[in-house]
Image (tube, rainbow, N blue to C red; front, top):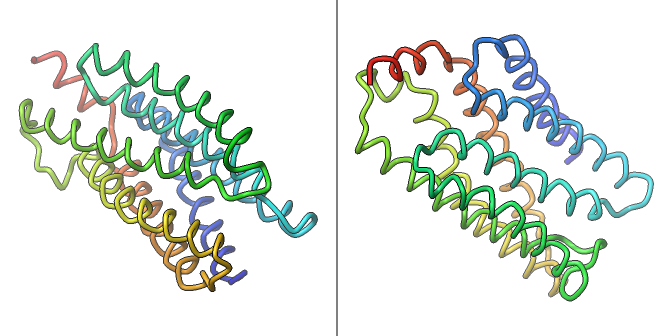
Amino acid sequence: MDANYYLYLLLLFFVSLIGLLRYKKLSPAFKTLTILIIVTFISETIKKIVGRIFHNSMPVAHLSAFVEYSFFASVYYYLLSNRYLKRLIMASIFFMLLLEIVNIIFFESLLQFPAILLNVSQFIYVLYSLLLFRQMLIQPAEESLFKQSIFWFNLDMLLYSTAMFLDFALTSYFIKNKLDATALIYFSIIVNMLFYAVIGISILIDNKKKYDAVDSTS
């Protein structure tokens, strides 16, 4: 298990490095995404250390769940062009903060897995990704889909969110009922590694000049 987790951390490190090396060339959405990956690498490292020392890293998990949502929401804020949707995205960050506070007080304490916040987040990510695909269909780019960083990121988000929504729900059920969740943990690691690998690809091919050129001709 440790070997897989260290491989996961190594992947996050390399994706962070790619983002840093290409930072000036990235569009605002992917600059935000790069910062998120760096924050994720740091939080996952801290989570491992806290888990070793205190045998419970859930307080870090609660914080990172909210921070992660805030960053992903900000990425979609840049990618979606509808002003009404942008306002809703910003409002959703405050809603998620309120939800996390209520969740900690009444449902899942800081020492428990933050399943509620994560499940709600994954559901919203699916909505964001579908809205962005709709926008891409209405406003198609001349460039091939497979060369578009937005396409790779958004497809990645849709598949990841769908898989993890199920995984988080099952993990919470298994833990509450004291069942062996080892298979679900391995599944989560594999899905996360694939997810961040594709994010690395999207950051690698992103170029703000392409979007500037599109905006100037539209």
